[in-house]
Length: 419
Image (tube, rainbow, N blue to C red):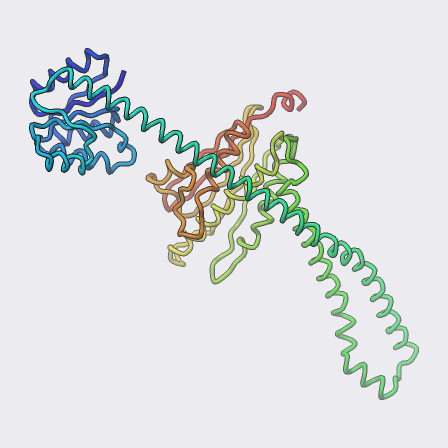
């Protein structure tokens, strides 16, 4: 049974159409002018519309144009009823968006045949659209799989190449610190033993600024040590983020994955070019080890955090300095009713409009300028959360207020029993 909208300003024609269509088992809606038909189309989204060419307020051609211009309604099959038989008239109707024509006076068998044909074509179009959607998803998965494979190899190489020399340097810094302190102590002993150095030695002491060197050299070593520790943390974060050795499901600390993602975007959080830094507020709940694909979930965390930073940067550019709120990202984790983990990433950025929100998880849909986004990130994040982990990824947003991305992940029964 299909939902069909019959539009005609003649009540007799309406009754005829309703009886003929209901006899075929269809659910029939009626409208007596173009504006009412457009309103009912938007409200009920019928499978097929039969409308008269000449109608008050909005004629059949304009109704076809408006319906086909709306992406949500464009697949509805449209049949124009007309007495016009000229080729030019039919061409005009087709250009306006009509899919088929029905001549007056209406022949019942022709009406039923064209309706059946139209519904078959609509079903085929829907199947084609679904197949295209699946194809886009498969394409995005293949692109991302290849991308992550290449990224994993690159991270492994970088982590290995950085880790070896950094470990060597970091391991020797403690010895250099001891040696330098011994040498400085030795110089101090020499100064005590020989309080009156020769003019040549005195010139050398003045030239190297021995007092400053004695104070600053230990500070330089401390700075070098801090630098190598940061490099080691970076290598560790890269390894945790990619989880190169953990391609299968395994219990992990989700907070560790979030922290590694936050560490990788630290360079985007600091103050730059007159813009205030981004404040990170963490509200972590008590979560047990969670069984998942760690590398994939870390990828989701990184993408959602990067999106939040993008929204904050755009918001800061658009708002005046006096009205700018402190750019903030809140990361919250909770355990809900012992069967679900909820992770919220909230920003007070530019937000998402109602017209864009329904499409944010579509493959290759993006609002970013060319070259700044391919429209794959949120689509793949949605697939990872929903298909790979059986969870939910939801978006709550208000323009100019902010966005909250909510990840809901179900616990494995074995882990709940163990916990």
